[in-house]
Each structure stands twice: as C-alpha cells, then as structure tokens.
Image 1 (cartoon, rainbow, N blue to C red):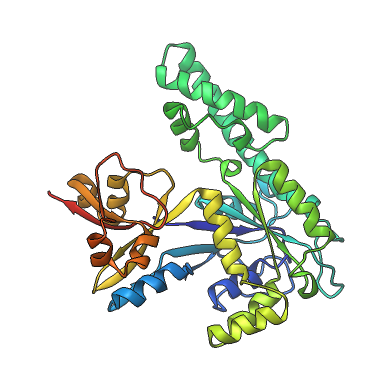
Image 2 (image 1 turned 60 degrees about the vertical axis):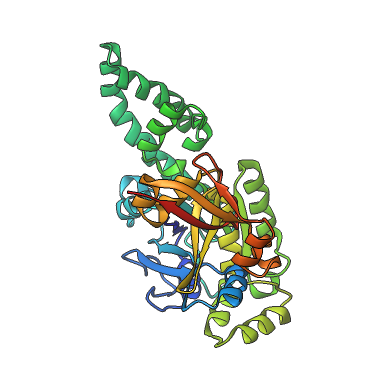
Length: 369
C-alpha cells in the first residue's frame, strides 16, 4: 500500500529544503524565490522501524525490506490559485493525486528570507492555502451539482445518492469550511464511497508541519503554539521540525553521528520520524511483517483490515485464495526467539477470514488458487 503525501505551502516556507532533507537528495532546487519548484518532485524513503531490525537479528535474512513513504514536493501556492494565479492550476492538479497533505508553515523570523505576505503569520498562511483549496472544491462541485440535481429529480437513484452527499459538502464550503467536516460517516458505505469519488482537495487529511529556527526545534515557539491550537481544533495532526537541522542531519554519514548531533540540540528523533508517526496516525496506517530466510518484509495496511485484505497487499492471489494466516504477535516472536520458539510455546495462532490484523503481527499466509 502506498503512502503518498503532498508537501504544500506558500512560497519560501521551507518546502523544498524539507523535501531535500527528507529524501536526502538535491533533486528539488531550494532557493529564495517563489516557484523554484516547477514540476512536482517525488522521493521515496524507507520508513524507519526498529522492529524490522529486531526481526532481522533473529531471522538473519538475505534482504531487509522496509515500507516506503512517498513525498511529493509541490510548487508554492499564492492567493488566486483557484483562479489560475501563479502556478495554481498545476498546484491543484498535483495535490489532487495525493493521499494526504503535509502543510508546511513558516514559524521562524529571518529578514534574509522573503515572505510573500510580508510578515510571519502561520495561521494566516494556512488559511490562504485552505481558502484556495475550498474555492477550487466549491467550483468543481457547483459545476456538477446542477446536472446531478436534474437527474435526481427525474428519479435517477445514483444521482439521488450523489445529491444527498454533495448538498452538505457544498453548504460547508460556502460557509468557509473544508469538505471533510461534512463527510458522511464511514458506516454509511454507499454515501462514503460517493464522497470519496468526488476527489475533493479539502477532503484529504492534513498534517501541519511547523518549520522553526534551530533554537526552537526542541521546544517550539509562539508561532508553532498557534498552529498546534489550530490542529487540535480541527482534529488534525501537527509536528515541529527545523528544515535546516534536517538538512544538516541528512549530510551526516552514519546513525551514531546523527543521534549525537540530535541529542546535542535536545532532540530525540529526526523530523522524518516525527512526520511518519504523525502521518501513520493521521491515515490510520499500521504495519505487519513477514519473516523468513530470504527476506524480512514490513507491509503497511489500514487499521481494521481483515486478514485476506492484508494478504492481498502482497499479491492479489493471496487474497483470492486465502485459507488462513499463521500469526504471531511481534512481542511473542521476539520473546520466544523466533517462529519455532513461539510455536513451541503455543503462541502461533491460526487466524481465519474474519481476523482483524494487529499492528506488529508476524504473518504467514496460506492460500490456494
């Protein structure tokens, strides 16, 4: 399962600097002028998970395969983007293809770095971006709604369902609220499926990233405090990072040096780790493992998924011909020295089609096609 995050924000807030640091590449040109990122830059990084290393220490596989996290650095947005200002149309098209939004907000003062709005105010900046996204969503829905309403009036059942879903969303957008506040409950499967098919920009979950100066990286500052209040009110996630520190960390050669550098600044982990953890929580993602002499592999799945669905992440045949899943919890696998030890102590379970896979499960799928 892919995990695709679009890095968005106003120009000159540190998006490309963050992208370069996170992916340890220089493919995105970080420069002090708007629109230095013309095409979306995509970078894949391995998801750090100490459990993977612990499994590998027991199994001693030929290869180790972590889950992958994809970042897309998207051109900076300005006021009027929904009407095509700046690189607006391109921005909106690119963000529509992502699963979640990492909204980078400038939370530092620096006279040497121009701010397109003339001052540092992360709440104002976030509202500029979200307003443009809401305007684009509203225009998209209003164009479609008239035709849907006509079909619904003529007795079209599909159109009636679409109308039921679209009406509250349009109302919310007109009131200056994102589409996600009017999302149908997931238990209403037909309505929620229709809602997802609308592909609205403001339906995507948001992770606010407060880009602070080096001295504020451990504790935050008055700007980041405001962002955290906003995130809490919206039931969103927020993290504090320093893109400059991330750049320095990315240049260090080994993990020991990186850890020592972070600790000297009062930090326990990199911004990448923070973003991954917050992103996983935001999208309801978890990890299960497969372990054998050929490879130890981490697989990402949606929380609440049943065993056949998780099997299908490896290969569609595994889901189609699912028989059962031999399952060991991560703790039991480690505590009893691996698969055989766990099995000898009665810790291997045979789970069927209705089993809800748990985070950290070590699994072996039996199937027949």
